[in-house]
Length: 325
Image (cartoon, rainbow, N blue to C red):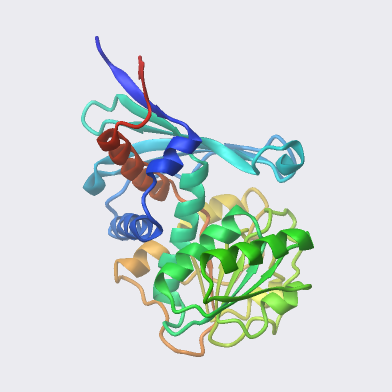
């Protein structure tokens, strides 16, 4: 086809045109609603694992209602920061839903962070107590930040406790919170337990560990609390997981597929997929005292939905570089 071209967007360009967190949350929630009704196509993501804790995953998805189709190719290694490279990085390729020809390729770092925080926020909308005011964040990296940003957009947060194995990272995180949200009380704590006990919401966003280091013990998570396990089951002791009244995920098929890779070997029964809850097909929180844990693995539908927003805004603002095919 003559004249065929695609738009290339660098990481900086994606960030410059990226939608706000409330807009990302709306797009992610819409994607989950479509999934809940069975109106998306998204096979379990295949992957390879070049190192014990490193991975590279291919994540295709098609959302007819959003006229979005594409794939994310993403890799991560927890040793990357020592090399001056982000822990996670990759690309999203978008295709035209009619011709299925590629129309854009863009860095996925910002998209991955924002859609992950948005997925936690969507889960919290249905699974956390609506009056949740305190959050404990374990892992003061990119995901720890985007999850707080997502939760802050939906809930009346007043207090944050942050823990990281690197104390200076926790202090830097706390300083950034004070700068961005001066009315939000924040403290960097010296132990994981201080970031869990008594908190309305807990986010574990450390590196994926296989086997899990199982730092969080039974009895730490308060009754009525909601926890988002961004790092899979890495932070959670089996007995702590089994105290959950409900355990949810964003995609049961993918969680089962991850069990074959050695993750989630001892978890509670899965109550529901997040899409089923958003679509109103399964109940979310039913009682104030319920302990609920959500483990969102990260879905291609969210990446493609957000990348489509980025693409449309970049075209409108004439940002990016057009490349011939």
